[in-house]
Image 1: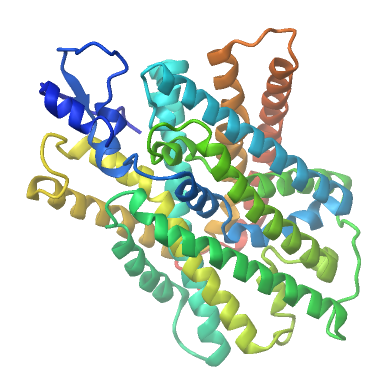
Image 2: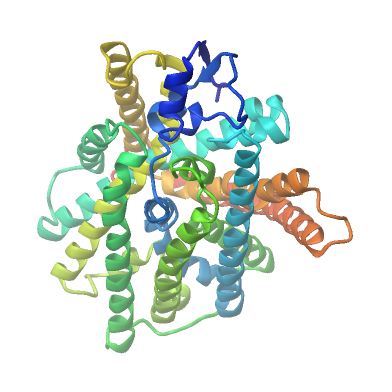
Length: 471
């Protein structure tokens, strides 16, 4: 991900005063008038508008974290067992809540110093140096976010094909056709001008994730108490090496389920002053997490044990016929596909912001022809490319654990600890210094081992991979 392209113009004092409450980009921490040019950044100015409340922040956080990947948590428990799975589910939740609050404190600290950071790469540039921002943090975040954009049309396409297959078991339509349909919807969603513009969509997204999680938990409990329930066996299959690597794969899956990767961009949408608002937003988000992750993971693993499939919905389909009524499965999938569209819209924002930063002119109006034309063309190109990749690589879900290991763990478990320690420089005798150091070191180990386990699983499944496969 390239560094921001910035332009400088002279801003009259009256204009500076008028806009200081609208966008922190125009704010001057120095009480004395500063005649120096003000730097304007189109990405932050047009996409990361600082207008939201802490409630809006909660909606954005919930959409970016609580996504259908939570339906893989029962499978993660099948790789870790009851004790290991539930413990890691709790630990990962506590660590990420702590981690995201550390990021928020670092962002607030720099904002108080007069340098509000709007993106992960801004934090890396100011704290670690420009090289880290340009060659590591920026590209890593872009890969994670764009990977989510690729996964969006794929998951929606799979849900549409699932519904189609329920009513037309011998139908001729292929998965890639449904992916293309979903890509068209994402193409429209991509034109939403800013992250703040998604606030109402993300409120609906929050309600949708509660709905399909409730349906999933109820479905699991229903199956578990019916005569259709498989024989419960909670043992972990395979050799000792398989079990160990499988456990690390499960760790990566849960890490991915808690991953966000766009905390600075979400905090950037909050209107000044930002103090304390991110914490309130995280409380909303983690209340939803507590209600969804644990209910789905525990009920799903309880119902299917070691026979749990990579997603709990696949387990609902049974061996010969669905284990739940058709209407129940259809409604659940509709909730899921609608929420995935909102999630995709949230993770499009770093791509949209990069496009604006590089190609837009901040000296002109946001909706001027000069800015609208490149925005429309480049955002559309980004979505079309992601949709084609989703259609070509329908096994893309197999790569999510790899993303969790090499992408989500560094951004969500390692860098926040480093940023905090370097920014606030806590005493090396303090608990917080050693807690942060321990989390960063342990997460680095998990990143390496989890990455190896994920690559191994991809190699094992590679014989089933086929471009444009109808999975």
